[in-house]
Image (cartoon, rainbow, N blue to C red; front, side, top):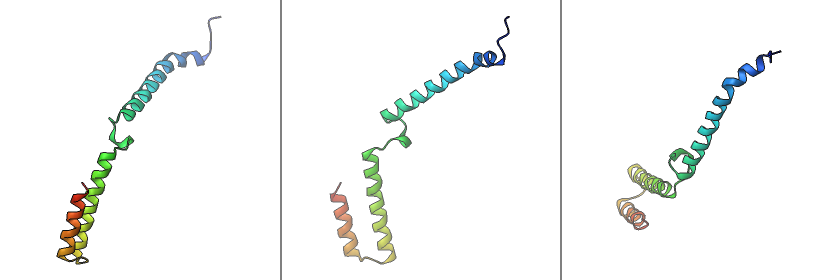
Length: 84
């Protein structure tokens, strides 16, 4: 009597560890849903700003390579700024 085998000895520390694990998972899900973790959510404003920067960068590269002339560069840059 009194001998329960090795399984019960392990259960003594496993329950608190699993509890902390699930608490951490729940906290991460809540933070992701609230937008605190930027890598896990998509923010339309940041995506739009990135695409705007990307469009200007592409326009600058095309002008630098000589694919478009100064007049076209100025016109397209003005058009991109008007979309803001």
